[in-house]
Length: 221
Image (tube, rainbow, N blue to C red):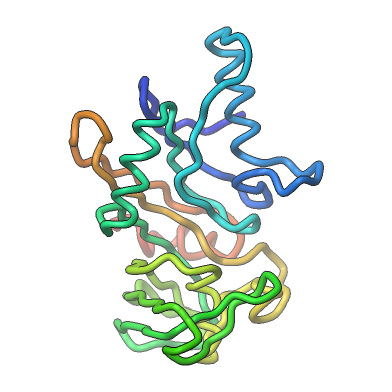
């Protein structure tokens, strides 16, 4: 089953489940682009190849909201919004330890061998995010994260470098009972044709988020 949040002739907004790639990596692992192309082909009885543009990605272990473009014009305009910082993504994360109520992280990151590292200005690209604490629970904190840049594994490495790794992040922290506690819960952008501001929100309920969800810690977000 595909959880479709919105679709029209130009866009397809869906929830990506944990463990599914955004696009194929050449293996036999399931990926959203292939799944959705098959869906469109069958649902609308389209012959031949189906166009669907990938304009942003989520890491395989990360769930959340994604938008795909049904036309090349829509893909181009959404990509332009990303470059112009008009495409807004907000995440929920559960990190180890306790944080202050709000903060900004700014670093320079470099990608090597499917891993991100903090480096200096001359060797890396600027990575900036803002976070707000939603609730603290023993030795863990639920935070809302807003990306100002979109670097590889940015949220994961920036929190981990400050001794607050995301729970369940075996690459930058420690393998846990559940998948990594990171979820793209809100997406906002301008419709590529009508220019109307669209906002989509979906709250995670499973894994490390379950207790916070049951306690209504972030239902008003």
